[in-house]
Length: 65
Image (cartoon, rainbow, N blue to C red; front, side, top):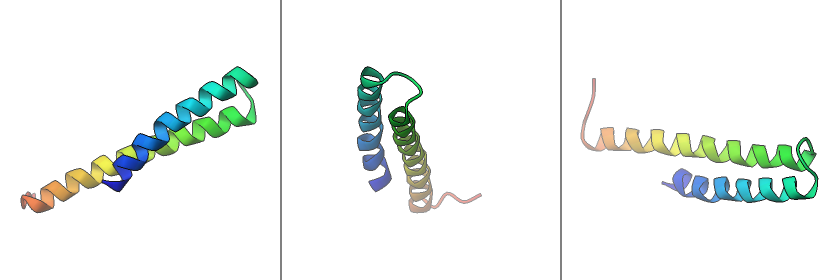
């Protein structure tokens, strides 16, 4: 659950950072790369959070194959 909440903060923050970097310097600047790293980290946290949520529900409901 913590990963999901962190991704909900990180992804919009990355997009805000992306807009600010594009307005100030355009594409290809180092701040644009940093914004892409923030967005990618948010996506990774989102994927990890969903995987952990599925795992937790399968353990809770005793779904084993």
